[in-house]
Image (cartoon, rainbow, N blue to C red; front, top):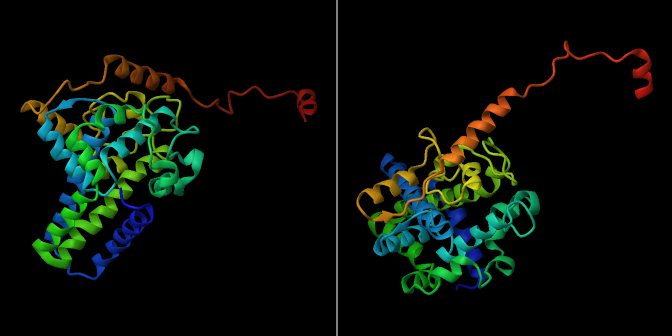
Length: 299
């Protein structure tokens, strides 16, 4: 592990360096590189760290797992076990004491970034955490967990070698910044703004804007209602590219035991929608006026 102070310095250096995008030449090809770097690593995070490690939503080939873990770790959001283990705790204590990043409990800044940088409280996980228990002894996963700085460093070096300083900014610094906030927004924005298809005990919400930049993670209320599903977008119109990749992997034999959304969950969604449709505010015309005597007594 890198010293905490060094991690904080590196994190903010990369975040601020994204502003250098205004100091280097603009080319549409650079925008394409940003998109590839942002969205591919986003899929690595949610496919491997989130849906595989944290929720066991499917199984995948060991080589494919290593590739996706390497890609996800290159997002510079620490190691897969640290990431997934804390996400398990988020669900265990969602929006209550114990949730590492709830805006309702610890405020927006801490839930968005502070928890990620504060190693004093969040850099260790309990030995009973299921991610620690099941994956910490897998050699290649333990290696990436210990040397989590290698994948992002390799990406940064590759970008500089291929295109010098401009490609380093467009292909590493800028997308690392946008991806960090796209991921962290699920912890904050998706617990404050959006729709609630399901009446969960937490404040999770669906938000199509965050779903786009976080490759399907923004269907957060869906996910909190049924965490085991390999898809977060429960319906075809809910954009979830991570789910499309999992389906493609299943088609070629790289993924199996893919967990579907049960029919009872879809039925629950229909029932909740129908129930809400029957609720309406009472009309002022239909309201029975209080008599003068009762009105005076109620004052």
